[in-house]
Image 1 (cartoon, one colour):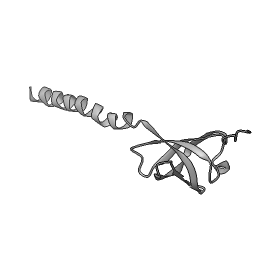
Image 2 (cartoon, one colour; image 1 turned 180 degrees about the vertical axis):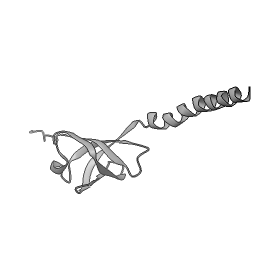
Image 3 (cartoon, one colour; image 1 turned 45 degrees about the horizontal axis):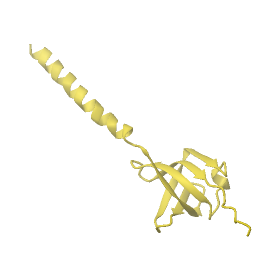
Image 4 (tube, helix red, strand yellow; image 1 turned 90 degrees about the vertical axis):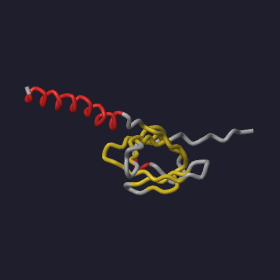
Length: 108
């Protein structure tokens, strides 16, 4: 009888703990930060937004660059970008960088 109770307790503990362990990864939703590139190196990007927030993001091997430019090396200081990152990343990792097309000045 004790073996069944012990096994049952372990099974219940596992059933309760598993969703809690997995929920950390599942709740790691992407966040987005947009602004102008103030600094860029081969492995880091610093962005300044309109509110004066300055945030740095690390490049990973899986970082995707889309939009007006298609590679990390093509991004330049002054480019407008949106970076997708996860709150659980320490340090912040740029999972996706969308480079926005430069605004066209209207001719008047």
